Image (cartoon, rainbow, N blue to C red; front, side, top):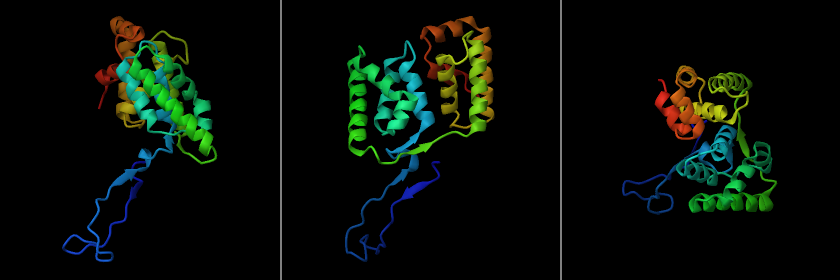
Length: 213
């Protein structure tokens, strides 16, 4: 999606650096990717951030990073409700860390205000195709089994979403190899499995340490 770039038109310039049509000094131009726009929402990102916010024993750094990213987005009311990201943000408003609670309040207030004022404005939502979701579902099932958890476990989901994120949102060879490496480690290395389930080893660090190219 990042290949769709919004390019600001450049004025015709003379050799002295001025616009020959208006006689104005050349202004600096910039570019914005489609994903950087506030109303363009990638559902995968929303669900990944929700996982981070709801995972027990999450680090303050990961929480503030997720909330900071969410503050840059304005999901539609439907997305906020269907993904339950709104509940995850709202619950953190009473977090013991003041920075986390402050950010959660800011995100909640921003979304609430926008929905009340501009409820009918459309949102561009980016979703994965059915084939991709099926492959990812199988990866989560294998991770759940390696963790000795029930299917649909939130920890397994968070791990898979982090693998997908660190694999540039592609079901590629590196994605598959990383999933296999994690399944093996979680299944056969009790120390790693315990560190992850107890929250002593954050999910993003776990994935990074087992990432394959």
